[in-house]
Image (cartoon, rainbow, N blue to C red; front, side, top):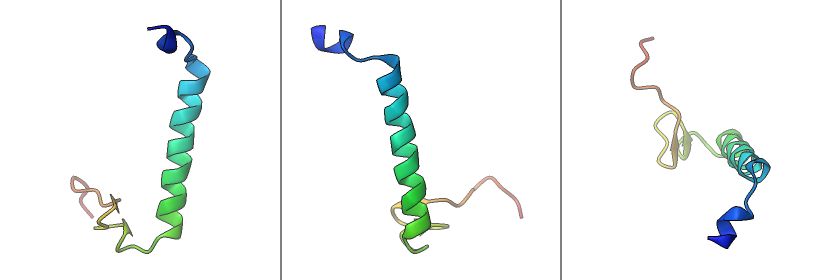
Length: 51
């Protein structure tokens, strides 16, 4: 329990921002077959959206 008391709100927020930044970098850098519409790692397709 002492370990959980050492974690601050700022550390949690920074962790979320870091994960979000890494995800966006992966979407930008990887090809669409991996991270894009219909990608197997990160699928950015919106199934509920009508075009």
